[in-house]
Length: 136
Image (cartoon, rainbow, N blue to C red; front, side):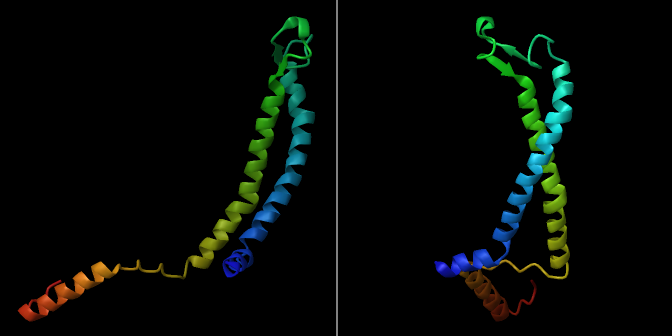
């Protein structure tokens, strides 16, 4: 069990995952700041001037407590999509290309044949040699 864990850790996947998480979270803060500073004012300009931006209140008598801020939801979606796109194009895609280049010269391993199929092939070959039939 410990050998399997050691192999998993030393394969590099854990390190790559940790780097992606750290860089992704740091970049998320940058994207969040940009979206909050640039995109939110543009989205809120589409809202009613008497409200806090693009959204609506469920109960007008409790406007602040029941306000649904649609612009915050749109901002969160934009932050997620931009962060995911940067992580994909900056880290995942280059790593996949690198792995593809490494594997380019290697032949894929042949599928392992089960014992049943191997035994049946052996019997087939023996019957062919006994009959003198050398066709495939």
